[in-house]
Length: 254
Image (cartoon, rainbow, N blue to C red; front, side, top):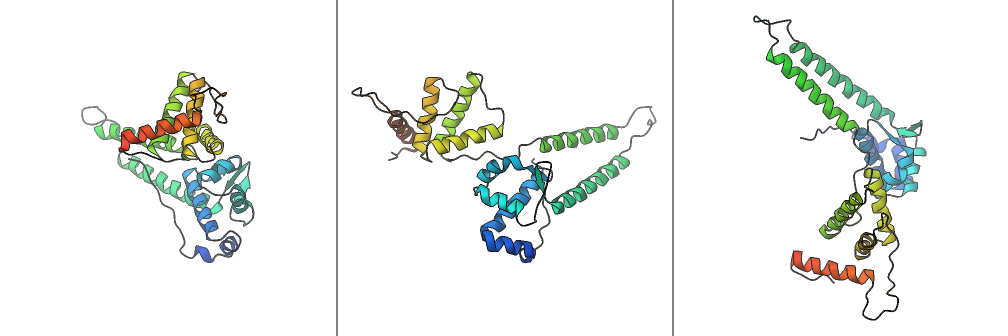
């Protein structure tokens, strides 16, 4: 089961003078942006790299300039060593970690291994406590090792996601797999720009790269070189998309 946490949210926070300035300059969306950044800080041990502002803005579906303004202009965040953070978030994380530490110490004390039992053997409780401690340490390492951004697709259809997964398998086959979620998110951002958020064109771009054995994504080549009876890559992708929709959903997409 995934471990989840909550953080305290003062119900009068919107009346803080700093938050009032956010409301005046960025509107209610600025308030939402602030709390989204706070959630991400809690998820990432209290700080985020400034170098990832573009990716963070894309993940939150907001303007990068608005994001940088939120970080720099309202004295709500601090900057150090190329990262930004919130002092209140760090304080509350430290309190949470201290409580967790005391709870672990208490548990270890309760289950403190005896030197030996009557038969000269260590108790089963000792082994269980060690196993539980190692499991918690493993989960904590996994939590800290997670990427700061969750993967966001420009198109949510089953057809596009299946095609994207096929593209990733193709990249693995040519020994050029994506090295991490940030690199893959960058590729998704590129295909959304190349296709101008046209799903059929995006699928055509993927098919074009796989058909030509390319490891990258490039502007769609719609030329037929004047050959009669030939169709463009976009038209083929559109035909494939309609055929797939007919097969899966029993209908035709126009």
